[in-house]
Image (cartoon, rainbow, N blue to C red; front, side):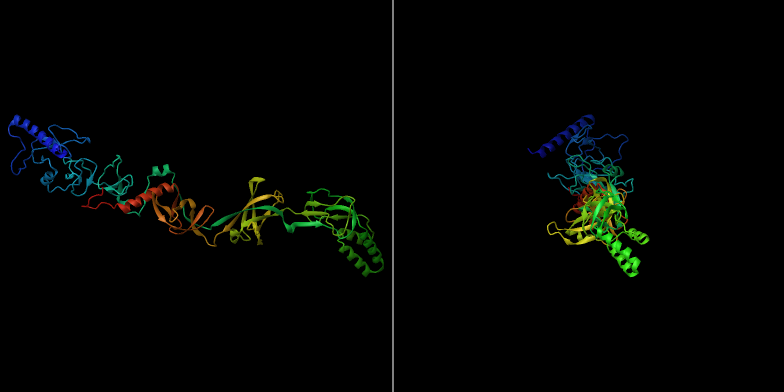
Length: 517
């Protein structure tokens, strides 16, 4: 015997037992009529004949609940006691059902009449509480101004919707879809203020910015070649006394470096003294010869004033600076042109940076540079690009770029190792840019989440351009002044993709159409 026949036999036995009890109690059973049943007004305290399972497959003489915890439906003698759903529908032809529920009681619904897998009719669900199954309230309008509820979607993102509240196979409630959400662009996500705070959602305003790219390079500190001098006399002589005798010693312009004796200068001075007594023209020629020897101007003035020859002379520093090299020794003989001192002014120094070949097109004179050195890890020095050398190293594929750096405290010393960041502008006009964390890049598509209002975010495809210093140029897709999500946007984007997929695969159920299962 099949399971269906067993269920029908059980129902018949239960009905017979109930009717037998009623027959013994009062004669002919009430509610059993032949032909068409005539509706009579119910008595004040009417008693049900029996109780029918919500699924329509079981009966009971007393109130009880089914396996899902639902109450059995009372059946009265007014004609609504018919156990079959089709008869119940015929008894109330003017009452349209809200929806139809599976006869087994499973959370399975339909907007139109249909049959289950075993051939049984779905049970109609009416608006009043006496009809079989749960009677949901009409779709309400939300208190937050989100419009009425259009339908309910699967909480796990499956392409499944329902016109009424329901649960999935795991007991999770279907999520309501409101009217204002359905009218938004595809993928628009609404997030409650509590969830916004929990996710750590942050937004920033897209603005027009002058974008610059930081070009990093390494280099060494060098002496400014325009502030470098050597002391190399034009005459022969002997050093009598060293007045500056240390390498690294600072000197001032005009400061005496050493005392010396030079036979050539002594003879030239003597010629001038004799010539000034005999002939003014010869004296002028002798004085010019002394100047050609680079005799200090104060010594020439003394000679003109006194007319006496000085045996010991002094040589002065030609500039302010420090002694980088010192070859002079007390008592030594020096020849014409021999370098005795090398002096450098370190108030301004150069940084010779090695810039890679692919970055040379962005570097030019006048650009600002920031320099850091390992010796001063807590400080940064500002400089400016003054020259790009015209040659490229064939081995390293780099070119020298000169950065000029003020050095008033002389903290920067020649041959120190340094790292430089050059701010190279990208284009001459400002562009719309957003932080790079706002762009969601899938490889083939770039998108940002635009905040339409607090808690509501719209995904929007954009066309990106150049990137620099944590910013991305937006060429198309958003305008300056719009706020974009820069934090927790991956979480919102996942919800947005799910929402867009649901709108693609599962449109809202229309009236008179069956909701997809």
